[in-house]
Image (cartoon, rainbow, N blue to C red; front, side):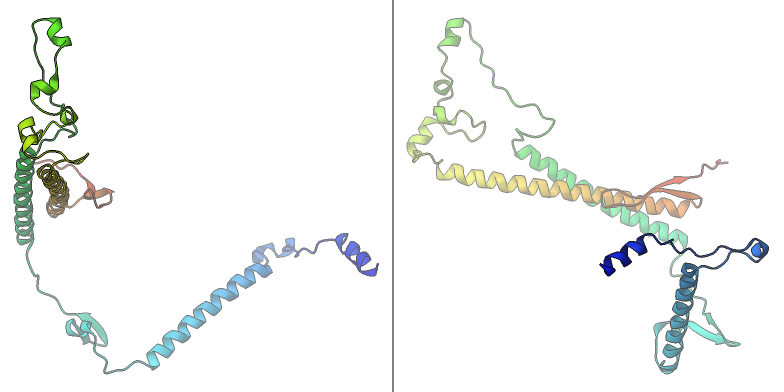
Length: 253
């Protein structure tokens, strides 16, 4: 009973509040509260710990330790100054190297395009995007011939193979090597595997040509940055596209 009474008494108590700055002391600024003191104390201790760590690092440093910057820094009047380095290549040499790299990438990309076109000409791209499917049209004189027309007999093949628009064997070929069950002849299976391998090769070459095109664009962008100084980046460089810059228009004399 006493515990319940004490809890009820606490619930009715007035909430403690920190006093605000007196009006007569407003010219001294805001009165610091406990949360402000905690932030100030944490910042002070953080800085003290950092100074203590730097002091310990300086005491434990090996004066004979070598690091590579020593080779290009010299001490003058107690100040470390870097030695002037000779330019590895001039701006014109950089442009020439970028141009040579760009020409090499373009040459390799054109070679890939020719290989892709040659593969496409060898393969029957029946399901290729943007290409209309081939049609085989038969002409008749009368409607009776249309009704009695047998496409399997006309093409001299089995009705089960009418769906094949390539490598469709004739009846004479099937008599020499008949179809066993529901499987195709060994030669047709071999041709199907070769065709699948050729399509995989074509897909790889198309992907390689696309990557070379992106690399060529990035090289061209870097070459343009050497010629023009006043620029502003619009979009960052990604895997699939180069960075996009906006250059200030300059009047050519």
